[in-house]
Length: 288
Image (cartoon, rainbow, N blue to C red; front, side, top):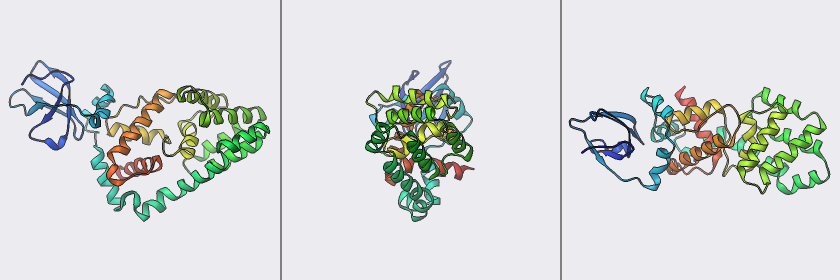
């Protein structure tokens, strides 16, 4: 059959590779295809095993988020499908996200930090303290929450403490954090305003930017450790449009990738983004 660019196909000889998308056709002789479960492959026209296929909703996400850069990385052999990553994870934690060693090592402390964040930074308490202009107390509560975990590096915690020394910075930070967590505007504008606040006191790191969303709402938002997040996304050939500058476009793509990962790990029954963040950290440790 004659194939076209962007056409969806399957390899009849290797159906376990899953759905593929034709990325490029060179001189009608060489076809380059990206497969969801196997990454990049090329086929010569003679004895081509490919046949046309349909794209289901479940398969749509990965193909909507491919980019030329991801494919170039994958041609170097960096792709690793999430099924293999899951197998590596289960080697370390045989009962998956229910494994006692996993719960003790990866989950318990983060759950405790979530409870603390929910207690000190819940909407009612923040509203009351803001009305009382108790910004110093809010800052103290913020530092208690950041000190609960080692997700932030010591220098990042020190930068936050330094940034919250001045009364004006305490007020600006508290109001911006409240807007981020509980504001009524679209998340895009709230997140971008939050990024400006962090930059104004020189603590604009992805870790700090996503830490509080992750702990207050772990069912929805992801904590971003840049090196880990980029590495896992590259392994999955998922374009997160990463830049060091904190911005909603990148974070929205990271959230999309996190949800995609959660869906692909459904057999392990992940509860929330605490499990997904821990999974990403663990498989990168395994790869190292």
